[in-house]
Image (cartoon, rainbow, N blue to C red; front, side, top):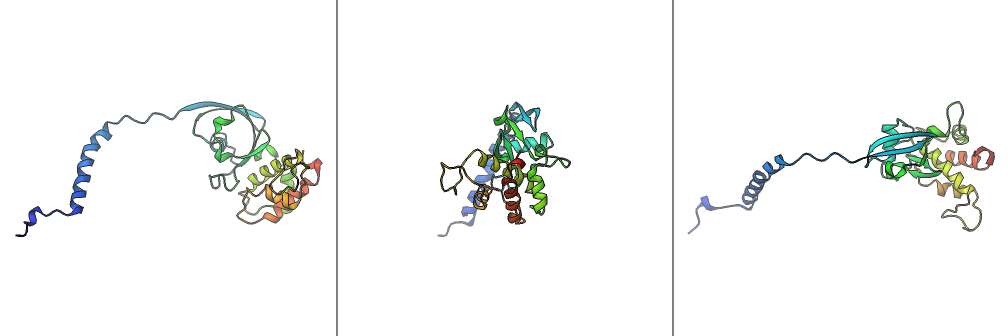
Length: 212
């Protein structure tokens, strides 16, 4: 004989009933859970654009967020936030890094240079002046990172650091178009002003007195 419909259970009904039972059991425990502990803090002191700055930061704060949100140095841009576009490039102890991938606490005691520290409207850095001359920007969003990166590139070339396209890694690298493009490949320009950017950097690279 067919079983009574009162005893028929569907798989969906069993799952729904089980979920409701679990929720009723867990909910009171969740309500009793202690509040989350405050995020750990750390004192950080570094020299930014020649000035010593001291901050108390959540240890998870990136260097980029420390510069923008805590020091109001908004010239450094947040683009992809994954270290792929180069908009957040700054110089740390003279070397270029992606500030979005580095924690601020890692740079205690370091010297950080942002676009604000390279030059001012009344006293432009040679790279800034060259970018203006060659129209090496359109919307300008990536420009601070481009210029900071270019400053790092010129320093690398001056120190004899080879790149992936250097024919002889024991010889002093030159500032050829291929070298500059390879070294700047980590900085993306959505507007596509690459030719003008390359021309601006090449002009400064060809004038050692302009790199100071």
